[in-house]
Length: 77
Length: 77
Length: 151
Length: 151
Image (cartoon, rainbow over all chains, first blue to last red; front, side, top):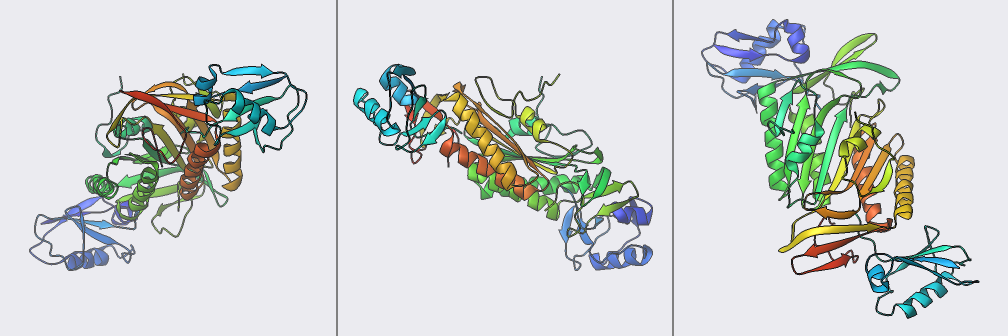
């Protein structure tokens, strides 16, 4: 199981702030692929991925228990 | 009569914050000359002159009733 | 009684209190304190913002704010930093972010403060939604710039 | 009740209140507020400052502060400025000067604020005397830099 976190427009597109997903092994790119397929109404092209609150490359392995957050372009400040 | 204003080290050298001086006509340079002679224990080399709260050149005429201030290098902030 | 800043890098729903940030960074070794406040701006290019909503990935955002602070304290020796960001619904002129930096010398205090806001706008997972009279939009494309404080 | 800033360019014997300056410049058109506070620094190059004394040619100093503010509001359109300077005896960490600048955009707010302190240190008739354990001195040669906020 991994835990997915959605924010801003993606949270609205998904209709929820978080969900869990059965998981054995894979990379951040695999998780992104799953989300992009599941929430095809959202444009993931500029989204960064954070695993356990740290930005990662798409090649980063994702292990069961990890928290994966999709980070649309930020606009704080 | 003109009114002279002293600050910081010059105020201490003069032993007073201000004084008046009989005056008919002259320039800022003349006032400076008078002060430098009178308070020869103070170094006037870096002092600027303000007449009626505005910096002036030494060639500026000084008229009776004017306020002349000697402005040592400032150190506010 | 001023209870002071709860933590120097915080994301909060509460109204921001700039003096708490300022007091946190002020100390005898410092001669200069700079403070930046990003406030909600009403008009941008003729478009009127009614209010803003900020959302954050709170634990990661606080971690990133702390990293920015640590980087600054290393890059500008003798500096101390506090950064607080508000989330939730904000009205016009409300404070969205407050950055306080102290330093022995003023140049560093200005530079480090500006560096902080630039980094925040790049890496801290916080998002802003603008609500106008006729619609709303999550802001994320940094080339698109209505409302609040901008480049 | 916050009675607000008495006047936006003031030289005063009273402790400075940064929030009054900040509130004075904050308004719906502004998205950024920068605040600078020059504080009394204890240690400089191993020499310990006990306290400072500031003196001013008050009417001219307030006039010059207002001129600096007017120049900034012209040079950085849409900005608003407040500057207050304390005089008299100041203790370590006391605020000597507070400068608040608001602007629609942050770059201008930083730039204008730094411009203000640079101008103050050049043209505003205010003097600082440092009091150490073993002596005192009016500071005026800007190349000589112990205590308070410096270049």
